[in-house]
Image (cartoon, rainbow, N blue to C red; front, side, top):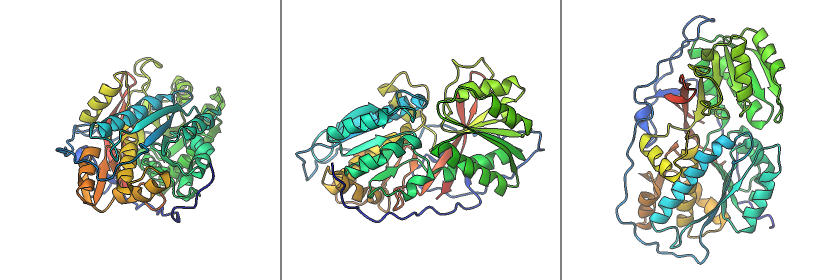
Length: 451
């Protein structure tokens, strides 16, 4: 397919985060922008890591306004909206595939239960993204474009998205990632067709760096995946640590496909950091035992969305007890988890399920407002349905407002969703989680910030 004219100029609107990222009660649920309160200051001595206690309301249920009878669309389409997914079922991020795919499928089900878009059921086609060690993503993208999709939800990996973004957007199709966090996409020449519900790593890095110092770490070591995701996140973690008065005393890189990490672990431990940030994908399965075997306490280990996973079958009990980490987005609330489990009863975690669910809903609502299933037309309305109108929280309630002539402001399961001109969320939550004795994690608290 040929390249289409640019929809609108895309300027980098990413601004510097304010010094105080607000700490919020978990029950906010993302229905509106919360009132900010100042973060706590770092406490404890350099050798003592003691993080704040978990919130009593972490992960509690919230209720979204339900719609009554959904009116029929005044415009119908001969070409049904067709959405592809490019999400990992193989490779180093395969653990993220199930919750993301479940989020897509739940949204598709709810959209079609409400009568679909422009008078037709929405179709979905799933394809594997693999990882950057393979060419699976390119092959899957070619297949999806050949089947006439208007939008592709994915990829999860920023590195993978970089291999297909020009192919997708050059075909006049929307790429909508639920999990890309590399700041590079903010200024990408994407013809107005790249969007994401996950915030840039400027925010996750700031929250993680601040949190480690709040826990008492004055010195930090990092083991970092050498790709767009890893090095970008590490840069922002380091900036936050240093802004809080701490110091990064060691940073060791490794490449995708590496299987030996002893050198990196030994060099980081030789610097004797108070805390160690693991910015990896599933390589953590090999790195964590190396560290704990050399005396690192799990309470010194801080992880990120690329490796926050269920390790109950990988490590002996207690290996990660007290380790903490960050995942962009608000906590998956109990009522949302129940709906996801009805879609996929085998789900073990919910990372980026909300972002995937929101991506589908936003595409569907923008299609309805555009009265067109062409990607370039849909893209022109994504920002509009995310801001400025009457608050609504699911497809049925939002499309009811649209069909009644109202302007809408969709806020979803991932929190308040308001896009910049660059297709980035301008405000977001970062969830902080703590590992339990069985090597699964539970929510601790959320932090909210603006970009």
